[in-house]
Image (tube, rainbow, N blue to C red):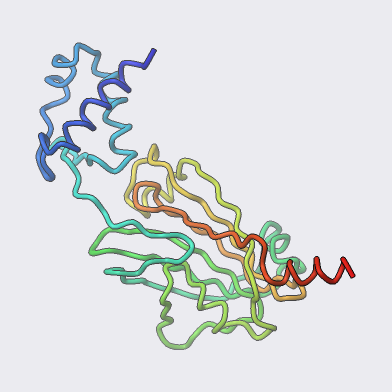
Length: 239
């Protein structure tokens, strides 16, 4: 049996999709909605939390809940940048235990850190912390065409260029600091991505940690199957 808060969320979702609740419209007060659906206030708030996590409504302190205007989604890993502006800061840090292990370097190795925060209008869209070995921070304002600073790896490294990245994607709730930076609820799921950049020889040259709000992000991956290289190898083995 569907839980009551899910039933309430389903009906409100239907009203939003049909336009019965228009974009920008204020929902009735929570006490009225709870009475309408014959549920407790905590149950009603669980339903509203589901809709907020989906990006369908937003709550303003002291004003109530409003139907949210649909947001253009960031597509990971391509990094659509339409309407985005990206603020980048950089500096040199020493690698702690965790970062040194991820980069395969000795403890306290000097690493260039880039922090990329993307915005659409005044709304934060993503945060990326990028750590590059043997890089030199730009003396001028760094720029990037990607919200997660992929091109900074190519521009900053003094070692062989990165040939590929390994990505570990996790869905979780944000930390309090992440929620504050992205201006989202701590109950809004995020995609947390760990990217390790390596050369053709497998040497790690950079590591990135990305945090992308789940209501404005979608992941699209392409996996080659039966490539020319695979075919050639199989033919060679058959001879």
